[in-house]
Length: 52
Image (cartoon, rainbow, N blue to C red):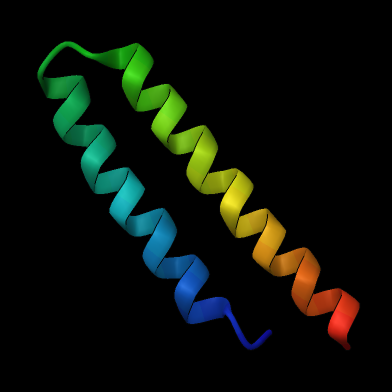
């Protein structure tokens, strides 16, 4: 669980940016941004579990 702070930062930044995109009417870009952040956080999590 070494990367929990990094995963948290990635997801929070993406959520903040997605809120801005949604407010600007760019829901599709927001969805892609959030999916990419989730994928990145998952990859970090999996790399942590493999190292354990």
